Length: 549
Image (tube, rainbow, N blue to C red; front, side, top):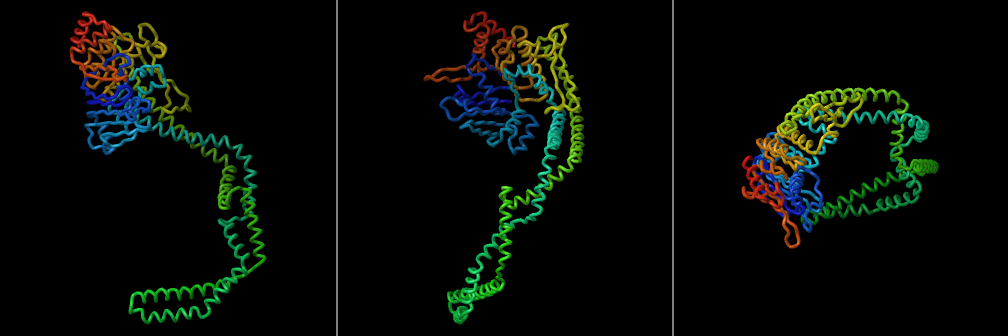
């Protein structure tokens, strides 16, 4: 259950810190006083998008914080996967600042996705516009797909659906590209022949450039090597040898002498190695004019081919390898299409079987749900209701991203009238009661610790309002409920009542919330009955309603 809610700098709310109780908590107040901001704040904690304009004017940061007591075993398991130690006392905090969000659960950072998962275990919010979802056929499956076995079957279907889309796109691409590829084949064969005849090698252009540079600088290289060798072959090394031997004689007398000796000893042998290497280089030097011409011709050819294909040599070689694959693919297109088509048909049949399994589970749930909706609607002064859920048969190769089902809610609210599409026959008051019936079932199925109703009683009065109040009270017997209402009968049914009101101070507006005592509740409910001109009769009626409650 929600024990405490703190709202800071959200719209006209500067700072609200309110504690809630178990059972039925009523929130009342004038239109525009800020009741919807409580809903907006809880929606932020459920993972709704946080807009920068939610922050109170002239403030830089806003936050919402809620303290819950958890007794949901599934939520406990999920929190443990997030390494959240305390799974009973849960503090959720969401901050909005500079377009960024910081979300913490028990002072531990969580992602927006994880916040949504946690909130889905903890509470359910009925917003005013949710009732009008009943006009939208695409939303009907939401009320059916809320059992574990259906969720599992749906996940299996969605995984297979993803594979189906992938293979379907691949198959269609093959069919669409077949003609284009055949037209392309001649040009690919020409390119293959051209590149094949060149017999290209990786880094060949760089290796040729190095050889050309050596041949073009033959005289310069020979002179430099020859001079160096002759210099080293004189008495330079002999003198170095004698010097390092002299140092050897005194190397054991001082550490520095030994260091000098080792350095000169290394230098002597390094020069000997260099002299030997240069000698071999001189012997291996060979100038071949014909070789130079051949290399220059090859280099020219490689530069032309790089210019033509507009890519480096190594990439041209990779392109050539890819050409072979493309040619093979095109020349074996029919075989490839048959192979992919077979795979496509198998995946499609498997997907259809999973869709049928999901449909059968949904139909069973739909029959059960329809009966429960009728029963709960009868409790809500819709005694003559007839309701059923119709499944439309989809074509065998028609798949949707939530199954193979299109459903509609069919209803009749009067005896002797045939059932028709809900969106065409229901009034606002009937829709509100039908939605409350669905929410009542949802509360039992999901085991929420909190349900929030934002004016779910819109459009009803009299006996129907009393029935709605009784139904909300029924839900509150096992689930904490926060209910925003303007209807006296519903407000009087509450175990606790809060008033949201606003004040002006120094030209600024501030929303406040306070828990009402019995005397204050009488006045607020009397105002719901009679308006601002509260009569003695309205006071008596309010007391009577509270007495009945």
